[in-house]
Length: 470
Ligand code: SAM
Image (cartoon, rainbow, N blue to C red; front, top):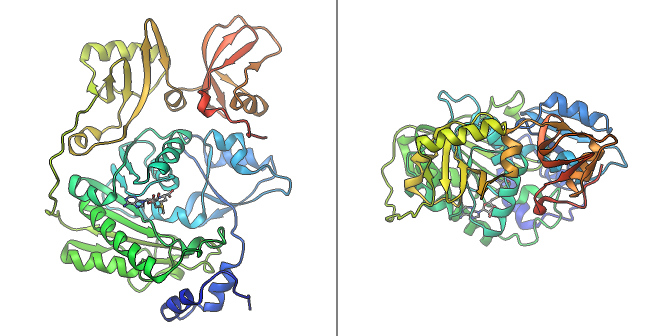
């Protein structure tokens, strides 16, 4: 029997009466004291699973498939391995370090739907593990609204979206309680990965229970109920909603879901998740939710519930919203000129209907976003393609990583130099001149400029990273 060093007695007394018959409290305690297996998700916006696994196998990584996510793997690293977060493959977005059970909510959102999912809201998004997974599941198409309330976490969200090459996302920065009012009946799918007590994270964070108390759980469950109601309102009729937490107790999970069911009666139904993957019934609750106790799949604890909205709601009372929107669609004449520039600079797959202008900048907006613009203020809409300065056209780093293919493929050693902000030297002088898209593994990692036998580094200064290692 494991000696309990981490879990308060009050917590154990709370969960014990509700544990399913086949699970024991001793096993919960033992599992919570085991280290967590390291896991990653391959970013299919930048490379395929096969290419990535073959690349990293050469560096001694051993992959084991995660049964519920075809792009997720537990990875056994060699003893002397570089910390994965410092690898050039991480900094260029080929993979995301993500706990296995945290891959479940997006998989549940997209599983078995009878309608296509084109517009998605992620109501509590930072730092973006699930937003970037959803964007990959959407293949960067449609519109994904990522909301985050905390100003300090918005920055991490934005930089992860850029690193992973996401281009279909707009960011809002509000308390998620307001989205139901402003964007009622708007989305095919909504995820609310709610702020919670975090009990399920104790295997990676021994301090997870430091501020744990019943009164905190009671307070946070009120927030969760409000966010879940707002998320449900934001759904179109026929749309699907996933509620998830990394809490293990029933107050934040089953009870919050029950409050939604009680409010919306005939307008809501539970989507049973027992067939989400082959072994899912081991974690399925009598209601059809997944309650992932850490010992079931040797993972973090998680809770996932899925609902469908049967009919439209009519509850919103949005305050009048005056948006001084600084962008305007480009005129047909401008669109032609811009189209020529984009072709000349080899930026592919951009329609003129997606082009917007702000002063001397040209932006790309995800399709369908224009319907949302009059209804709510967004902190960031789409991505900047380029700006003009006199006769110069300055392309944006994020845009070239999303919309171009590389002119020059560099080695892993050269990539490390590039990410450190250094120029890349070649043995032989070339007669090439001008801008060049620098690539690794077939994806553009940024801009450079040919100068004789060198590519001058044009990585934005804020992305230069001295700690990157092979
Ligand atoms: N979904 C994220 C991911 O996978 O990377 C993790 C989300 S985390 C569990 C919950 C997030 O909700 C935190 O970033 C927190 O700042 C945010 N949050 C807290 N209160 C909120 C509110 N009222 N509205 C929206 N977001 C909120």
